[in-house]
Figure 1: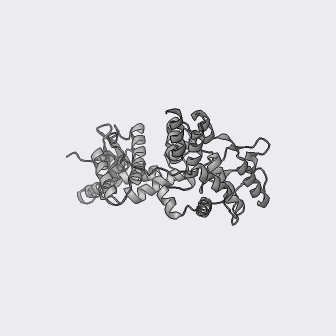
Figure 2: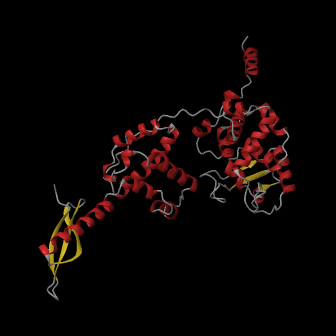
Length: 387
């Protein structure tokens, strides 16, 4: 087995004093070409060689760790705040990563990756497809959902891919590792009759009514609702400009890539927004439409909007059990808008412009026409046409 270092003596020309040095093995160059002074003078028992050997061993371990870090250390530092990757995405690529996305990856490492015994002493260079596949099995057997295990796999794959791009790894060992198949429950949507009921159901908080109607009649995401400013509304043209997004850690960020858009306002939404403006403490252009009542200057929380939606649905007769069975939540209102628009005959390109989707495939994932079809009407239409 090759020694990680070679000891040798060097003489100082000015004084003639001898001291110990070491050359360390470099895996990349396949040579002993890393020279370090050990700070141990020649003299005493065995000329100080034993002490020099101990110091060199410590340095060798440090060099090894830097050249081939622990796998867990590598991926954890990759997703750490202000890491090289995060700074590069923001300053070089001009595609900054959202704080929510970063938190998801850190949480995945903490809950589903770091606890795996097989990763405790694993070095970056020793990562293999089989090791990651064994981890996937362990994660599922220890309670991770397919979705959670796939998020965790992504938290591993991105740093490994980056290590290959930087030359820290010669090849990506994880190209053959696939995601665990997911079977997500279809998102529920409201029928046209239920949408009508939702518009007219009593709700004491005008902010909740307007927020829910923006989701179901304009297709806004939660962050787009929370980020809406009064200056984004054009009352004369009855439209709003979707150009802000507000999540818990980033109160003023851009909407999802390609999601800036203009959306026409349903009459019920205009009425609801006027109701909010009537009670708003401030309604300057830069002020949040959906203001917080407890934290001035901040938007309403996402939980408050969801609780309000549940309250309105409950008043319509859609209780918690039915919401769970039908998988109805705030994002389901956006699905409802897209499904309704397509079912009314709008072209896909028009619906994509309204929803901010970038592809017909994604638009299709948000459409659930079978849930809102009037089968009696369909049967009558067919029977009239074919007799």
